[in-house]
Image 1 (cartoon, helix red, strand yellow):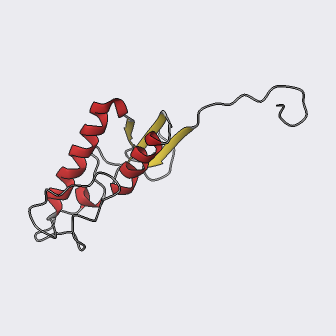
Image 2 (cartoon, helix red, strand yellow; image 1 turned 90 degrees about the vertical axis):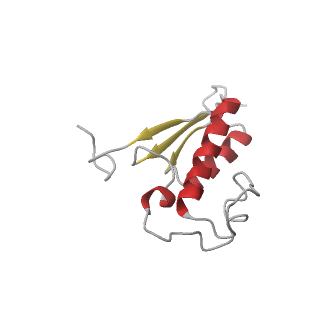
Length: 125
């Protein structure tokens, strides 16, 4: 098979993927990409820790607005919630456990924290 009629063989390479954000969606994307065979994956996160909304929001009374057992069900189903609508810190802890479990299975991904101008879309110094 040749590419573009230039006579050179088409070389198949594994894709390199960048996921922006290490919240629920970013972590779910990383798990699903790994399951699909993507090995070269980097997660970009503006903060020093994963968790997205569940890391950022810490106000009193913060809970999930849908039943916790179905909220991140495609990531790693868990029947072990303290309440039907779990508090934010519990969900953040769940995300940290899922990330540790994935790393323990040889699924560690590079997570880069972006700060300052890089996080705002500008170039770093």
